Amino acid sequence: MISVIIPTFNRAGLLQKAASSVLAQSFKDLELIIVDDGSGDETPSVVESFKDRRIIYCRQENKGVSAARNLGLSASRGEYVAFLDSDDYWLPEKLRLQHEFMRETGFMISQTGEIWVRSGNRVNPMNKHAKLSGWIFEKSLDICLVSPSCVMMDRALVHKGYYFDEKLMACEDYDLWLRISLNYPLGFLPIDLTVRKGGRPDQLSAKIIGLDLFRIYSLLKLSKMEGVDRERQILVGRALQKKSGIYIRGCIKRGRCEEAQRVQELLAEHLRTLPWGRHLA
Image 1 (cartoon, one colour):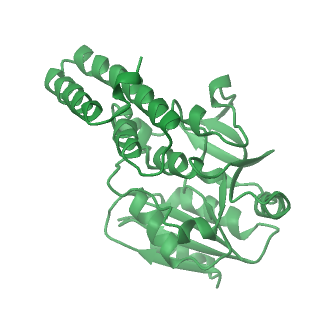
Image 2: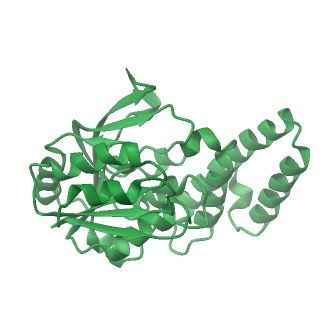
């Protein structure tokens, strides 16, 4: 069985299409876990309207997307787990083809190709967003190369403690994929089976200014993890310097000088505690 997790918050109109695309999959042995993150709209009525026994509806106080996905992971029972954001949807063969791909290749985690739609129009991703297969850790430090709605992973990763960091308001996916890619290669099924929609004001990327701050927090945490070899520790340190520089310059440009100084001091203090800090360029 595959467990599909949809976190949602005040997106009753969009949830209808997302959930329908799961229930219409050609792969039928699934459970759909819809986690309502404290919505105040018609989300419960939308869920009830499906009357499908494969749906598990969970509701929590508003805690953010990480907590919602983690609740779904805790409630899931499938051999594999797949994620779908409530504003995206799947093509009918997504689960079947990705399930076959996972079984045939032995990858613990994989993603599919995707179609990008922005403000109702199809757009082409830039070259820097090209999806990769294999050991993607180094290239993922600069930019998130994994889309949550494209991901399927083996339940064994959940048992090993790979959950989303609930302290991160954003970039929680960047953080989780980095931690997983430290120890596991990522498979890529190069077929566009996910439709990823964007360009709306309710998305975190639109609501939060300075997303690099949360990538900085993720990298700070990563640099302290045990079992990370020296070479990759240095790569993390260089990524920290780069993203901190971008964020600090952005703060200064916007007149947020105290925030710029705070992050600069945070980074300097952190690097002084690391034995490989002197190796940074």
